[in-house]
Length: 83
Picture 1 (cartoon, rainbow, N blue to C red):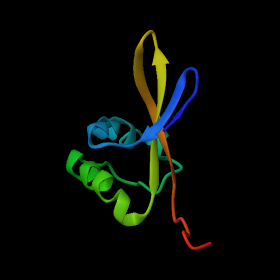
Picture 2: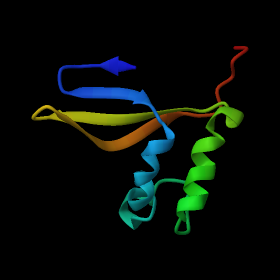
Picture 3: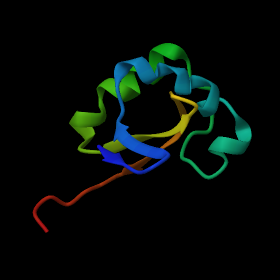
Picture 4: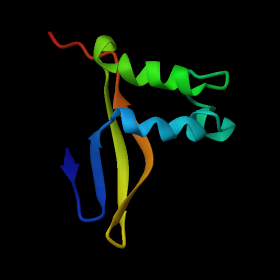
C-alpha cells in the first residue's frame, strides 16, 4: 500500500466489484482491451484470477472529509519476474 496526503494506492479486493460501472462505460474502456459489457460474474472472475495472471492491480482512492472514495485502478501487467 502506498499512502499520500490525499491519495492511496492499495491492492484490489473482492469488495471492489463496484468497478463494474467503470468497466461498462465506453469512455473509460476505449483504450483498454475490453470491448463488450462485463457482467458482475465476469468481473468477480477477473478479480479472482489476478494472482494467476501475475498482474498487480491497485485501487486508487482519494480521501474526502474522513472517508475514502475509489476513483479508479491501475496495474502492472506481463511482469517478467526473472528479469
